[in-house]
Structure formats: structure tokens, C-alpha cells
Image 1 (cartoon, each protein chain N blue to C red):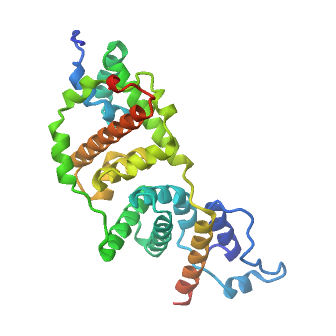
Image 2 (cartoon, rainbow over the protein chains, first blue to last red; image 1 turned 90 degrees about the horizontal axis):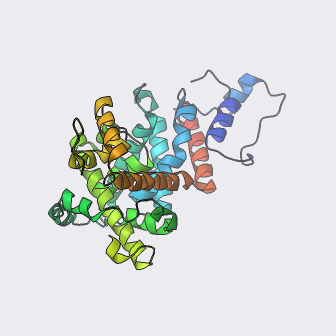
Length: 231
Length: 88
């Protein structure tokens, strides 16, 4: 923890956060002895935290953004809380596991705590949706065929529409979908983050993706990108 | 509909498509799905569409970047946290 000089650690944190030119933290005078620089204001850095955790800032932000259905302020707060908690608990982080999934776990738990405290969640009746989705057999969905065999369909969509469609997914599907499709986590990692069996992860992913694709198909039909009958 | 010798049926290929794209199948299962997709005109478009979806959503995530102010706040918070821990 004391192995590196203050400014080396500050520089590392700054660089890992992808910041530009630093202005708000004054450099020590060049002739200040290293030990004096250390004593002056030495932030403790858990070994390797800056290098290993901070590169995932954007990924955690993107995850937080989708968890909160696009609330940027809340996502920023989640980022702060997640990294501060991770910083404090870095000693308990199990080396060899993926930092990214650990950070996602902290982020999600923080989000759930906040939600519980606020008691103003927009919980959706996922069970109703489950029933509706279950009624659609996999076979009948496949019979419809994809809206665009060439995949050009996605080129015509507007990002905001896709983001909105993701944000409107029921939370349990959205979490799994975001962790897989945006966060690039393996099923086993998602299972750990969400605390559910891998089979449940697969099922939520499958359903979430199907709902999302149906929504996107609707968008595309409404805007005339594809013909309604095509689906 | 593919029912060739040694080839998995369309239902099986389609049921495993997401796991195939997510890289979650065993080598043997991957090979079964891949061989099916190579020759099945019915299933390949599904694969193509789902692959395009995945690429699109992944690109979407890569474009999302935490705002500068968020980075700055976190940087300051980590410095203060470090100082607090050091002083404790």
C-alpha cells in the first residue's frame, strides 16, 4: 500500500479514469523530498485497485444507466458508490475472479439498496409478462422468422429507440440482458451477480431478448423500415 | 428443414442459437450447431439476425462513456477516501 509514491498513484488513478489534463490537484514542488510528499497527503491505495478496477468505470456506468432505466444522475451516483465500496473492500476481493463481474455485483446491490430505501420503484408485473411470454411457444416465435435476414434492420434503428426498448424491459430480464449483451459477462458470472442459477439466467436472457426483438420489430414496422406482414 | 444423417434438427439448432452466439456451448455442441447453420436456409437467417443484434447492442454499450464530471468526482472521492483511511 505504501510501495508507490503519492504522485505515481494519483497519476495512475487519473489515467485509469481516462481524464484529460489534471488541474484541480496541485503537484508538489519538484524539490520536495519524496517522504515529505508522502506525509503531506497520502491517499492509501489498495494494491492494484486503480489499475484493475478503474478501467471498468465506463462499463459500470453503462450498467448503472440501464439498471436505472436511463437516469444519468442516479447512474453517476451508483458509479461513485460502487467504486468507493470496492475501494474499501478491495482486500476482500478474491483474486483470480473477474473484477468486472465483482463491480457489477456491487453496483447492482447498491442499486437494490437505494431502491428499497426510496420505496419508489417502478416495479413491473413481471409475472404477468411471464404468462404472456410463456403463451408464445418458441416454435411459433421462430415460425415468424426474423424481420430482416441480412441484419440490415439494425442499421436503420435509432439508438435511442433501442435504449428505450432495453430500459422498458422488466427489471429481471433487463439485468440479465445488460450483463450479457452490454457487459459481456458469461452465464456463470451473471449467475453470481444476480444470485440465481445458470438455468434462470438463460431463461431470463432468452425472454428478455425475445421481448426486445419484438419491441424493435414494432419500432421498425411503425416507421416503415419493414412491412408489418413481414414479421 | 434439415434432417440429414448426423445433423441436429432445426428445433435443436434454434434452441441453442443464443448459447452458440454467447460462446456457452461445448466444442461438440458448437460444432453441431455450426454444421447445421452451414447448410440450413431456414435457420441461417435467424443466426444472422441474432448476430447482428448482438453486434449492435455491444457497439451501443461501447459508446456509453461516463461524463467527465463523474470521473472528476470519483477521482476526488477516491483521494479523500484514501486520506481518510490513511488517517484512521
